[in-house]
Length: 511
Image 1: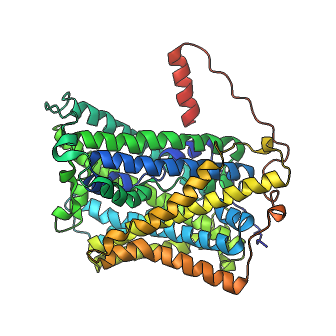
Image 2 (image 1 turned 60 degrees about the horizontal axis):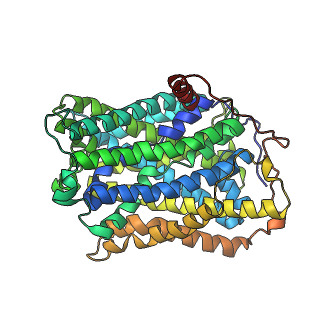
Image 3 (image 1 turned 180 degrees about the vertical axis):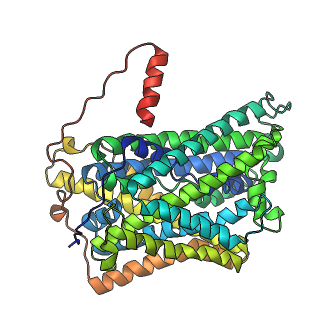
């Protein structure tokens, strides 16, 4: 039985907020920094395949979660869905895994802040830059969902424009229109497009999943969306363009201009190298636009802080949902007059203080562990979402519900759910083989610690709570339902010349 609060989360996120958040809210160091490591491991061709494969998984997850979140728009959505549609112990494990994932993502992003700041001469210690950044995002979140949404709207706009400009500049540099040298696809043949073959692609999947995680954020924001039945489907549909343009497009541009040997993070004695040879910076340098490197580094800084901001928001709402489901400390249910889960926010922030250990622990080891943990943990979350959606659909059919009541539906069901349920665990388990030969303690911990804790946690919960799989006929499909008598809205037909229709599509997408 979930707990009520005298104050509730406020539905203050507008359509334009969700549109921008779905496009760029969680684009962070995974794309701007870690993509160089993927390019080095898999080569330009292999990296495209790796991001494409993860993109397919993300696409199905987005639509599966979108279908459930528009029908039952609650904050912390899939934690509740997994408990309600599958099993209480399963939902509890997924919820804590997701909260821990984003708490660590916040720590990971904040750990990257001093690395980025070291690009410019400064006298502040690393822990100070992390602390300042944490204080900034904590204040933004304390001001409420509207503050978060407005901040992320502008942060996301900056990131989106930066990526689009990067792709355009990359293509112009490749063609010799900027920089004077024609690159074309010469690096695909020398030094090569697939330097490590299938193994390189396989090794890149975890970092690719780390880069693309955050699709679920739209499901979390459904609980604070002004009109979830209208706004969430539109935001979910943006995910396709986010994958194709921002990730596939960026990797394609990098692969034309940068040989994979130029993105080797092990060729320097410290992690600063990962920033100073960020693929985004290298492309501008290849075009003799070195002066832009400072601007690019500033944008990377904004990107990292923005992703940490989104991570803190998502983690706090997930922890609030766990408390409201009576599976976390009851004090975490407290919501201020501004609609802010204050204690859940503070608790999540305390976890992120792990970033300060960068002052004591060698940066590369910490950074590797932090980026590996969320990459594997998010695969568990995606698998859990698809299991919940599969049972949601089966219960919907068994209880003779009308599918027209669903504001949006996942295409080609159940193929997408089945694909994610099979492929996500396989990637999580088998991509860590390389850390055993030669042995790497950092690699093994980063790859398998999250998996081990999830399995142990789930087994212990099953033993102590004696929870069972919920029968399909008993699954609750009504509590929290947004509109019993939902009537789908007709989409107005766009008229006028092609350029007027194109402009209207842009306005619809971003407002």
